[in-house]
Image: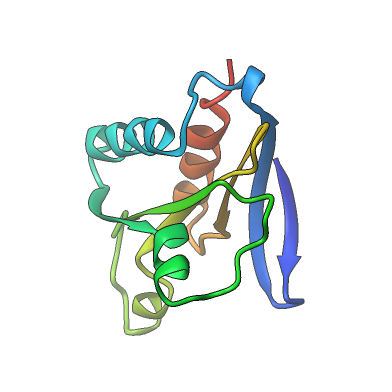
Length: 128
């Protein structure tokens, strides 16, 4: 899993892997697995799925021709709410992009180390 900066200001974690190295063959199948992990977690709640690819197509947006599908699963851990600041960085989202022969799974770094570690474990578990 690689940590990098998106647009020089957003810390994201990303795992790229060949479809042959995945337990799954599609973005929806990966999202089903992540949803099961969210629902099994005692402190997480599933919120929604967002079809980023279809949305961008529907608004005549620009899509890299290498992208076959791109969707997000939106959820929240909600371990604590000590003030208003955490609300600005919640809920969490994991993005899954189908690049034809590979998948890219990524998410923004979480301020809570337990949430961060959990998301990394979930993403790494997608590999065979």
